[in-house]
Image 1 (tube, each protein chain N blue to C red):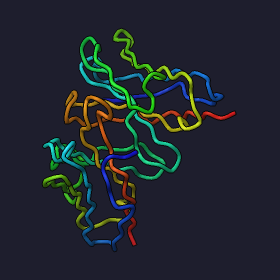
Image 2: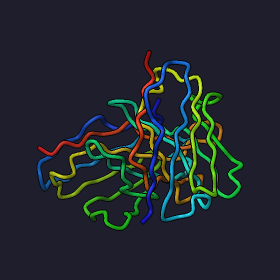
Image 3: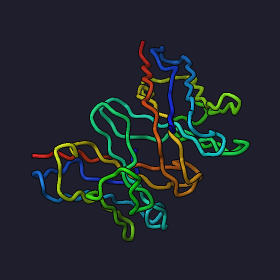
Image 4: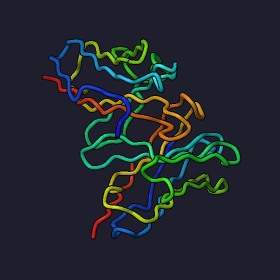
Length: 112
Length: 122
């Protein structure tokens, strides 16, 4: 049902850098619509992590960064911390005809 | 402090109805596009429905709920709602309400409520 494709899981040791990809199409990311990222810690509601491709809301550590190119986007976590272990979702615009907002399939980040 | 609080979840039989509420505090709800989203147990996030800012005359629904769910808003109560009819087992999920600060195309969700659980089972 998800329109945007993410890897199911990524892992890294503390201090390492990991990246999460978000693959879309010419109907969403490739149509120049912005990509946003959310972090969902276990048992909690999602929290905005990155908006409009590269922007961090106040309070989000600068080890989180976003990028976008063509029909895909990426979230990078530098200096991985144990508290970064969570599910991460990308999100973009779908279309006004259905699926106005679309999400990625989600990626589980495990800190080894 | 900008906050959203959902209520109204519960256990309902297939074919039944339920009305979810989302109360906003710290901001004027009618200034923003507002949405309902859901997350089935162990699954990912799914957008369900939106209501536009201002008069709230523009609404939109995911194909999976179109014709069964209705979104509405009460500006006086700074709240909005999701009326869910003809519920199916596959509607079982944690339902979140969220604000779109960008108001529409290209927008995102911030903040989110804590969620209210809807279980559809016989």
